[in-house]
Image (cartoon, rainbow, N blue to C red; front, side):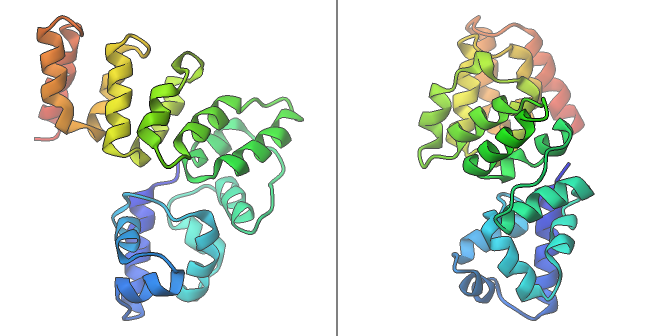
Length: 222
């Protein structure tokens, strides 16, 4: 599966090899220095339309840039074609799940049409991506019909959610719209919510098992 941290480390290394500052690279990509910083930290991923320019600046192929993030060859083709404005032929569902968070809803929708023709349903990916693609992500997360969202797929989007959106997911757990067991997947991205989780257990809103999840998480990250 594509790893944004691994990709970011590679971008930082290529930039430094060219003796280029983050600000200089940002100017060339027409983004902010803060955006480049987030790319390099793995906190966010560039819009796929930026990838072509980034590869040209670094003097490498687009495939080489994408592969730096640990993408498979099929994932690389999907992302690379999308960056070039081309919709890839359909493939296996696993090929799209790992990189779905990196694609625009419009691209996913087109892929869904292609995949559907081959009997592969990725409508749940499109649904979730549409809700994550707006400017008010937290509000959109509130409106998601979680009954139609696969929890494994939702967990793949956690790394790219902002804190407000992650809290919105936590609230869905409190409301019973997501299994409380999803907290095990949520914890690595929301350690700042542990006190809220513990309070919810004390209040009876969450079962005592949640304290065990928190203890295991703390122990594994000590």
